[in-house]
Length: 188
Image 1 (cartoon, rainbow, N blue to C red):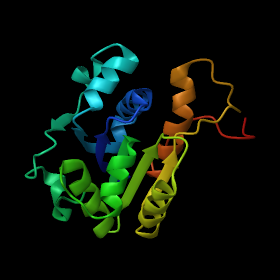
Image 2 (image 1 turned 45 degrees about the vertical axis):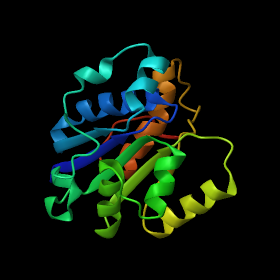
Image 3 (image 1 turned 30 degrees about the vertical axis):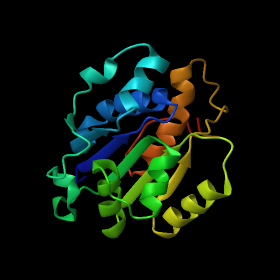
């Protein structure tokens, strides 16, 4: 199996638990990964600290790039990163991606992934949605991106916030093409 080159963008949308669980799951799947490039938006760390009451993002074992580092390898399609996951994805980030506004490394990398016809997965968390949000999601979907609403499932009977968040993250990792051992509906 070819190892994956992944970009992870973490924005300041509420839902830092999803980013935390994604980082833990990627670490569990490290045998399937060549490299992970990580980018935080301006507010991502603030929201993480507020919601999770820690700074565990400081110990994530992947190279973190500054949001203005347009020399990062995945700012170009030639680096051949094949998947980008934005988790959680704010509606502002989604809007900039939908309209081709590459004003930071997260939106530039998403633009590259879309233009190269690779996998862009946006874990959105906002509710309710305005028609503007829905139109932006439609635009990204038509461009080849995948909107993954942070709508957890309950059939695996999760007993913690982490397990609940994992129902979304595991589905995302399936969509990204990972071999992922997780609860499957109606399977023993």
